Length: 147
Length: 147
DNA sequence: TCTTGACCTAAAGTTAGGTTTAGGCTTTAT
DNA sequence: ATAAAGCCTAAACCTAACTTTAGGTCAAGA
Image 1 (cartoon, rainbow over the protein chains, first blue to last red):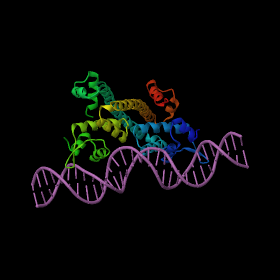
Image 2: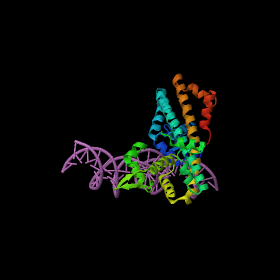
Image 3: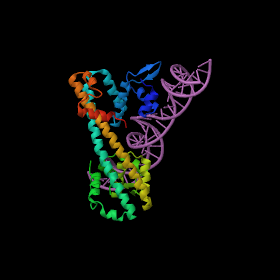
Image 4: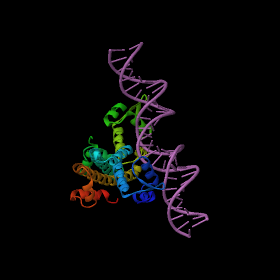
């Protein structure tokens, strides 16, 4: 069993955030001893899931819903399964988008490196939009492709 | 040249958002004809960069700074290069984190699929934390690894 | 000419996700 | 026994990034 301060340390989250999550119902059944929160291994796993779902872009009220399902029992397995499958699809899309973002950033890094060498953007403006070196052209095209 | 409504259509962004960006100084030198905004090809490219930088997690005030550098000229090439290199590092870290998130989600999908077949989590609780099928164990370990 | 649709501004409002404050218990080490 | 550290709550506050509102301008078609 852990105190809120220990959990805060372990997860690198402010104590105020943990209390906020608790207030929002993200730790149903969290134990208390004379008013003081005692986090069990189960609560830590819940917190890991919270962090995962948050990263996947889920809102707090929906995470609360998930935690409520966990309390409700096996009848909610289908709901929970659906939730994770939906999140999986969303994160896969997000990853693709972020990869595209990364290509744009890589292109821009090359762009300013070149501009810095040349002292201006004149040559770059001539190369654009399709006379770039092959590797760079790939980045540029990918970054400018329609979603 | 495009009207704000056309740009809104093209980028799938609300008109109010485009006006907000303009108010925040993200389109320096945006042309107007009797008060009405006319977006040039240059402004569209700016908007593409804005979307990219936003996805990379940059705040509006810092995007504004970047746009100001673009107006300022070649003396700011080093600043702009540094900005993109920093963003690139951040997005690469973000991608790694999101990949880990995805592994957790994949694990949870498998978990609830199994729980649904079994009708309970008893067998799963026995398999955890290190008696899982190899492929699944990999997902689980990766998702639970320290940052 | 009149009406419709698209544009404009300034300013107030909204939302999510916390954080801070003020005042007060509890536990632990000396 | 007492003081410091760590815990508690309720409620106010904060910030970013928009969005909405209210009131008005402008240009084109019937």
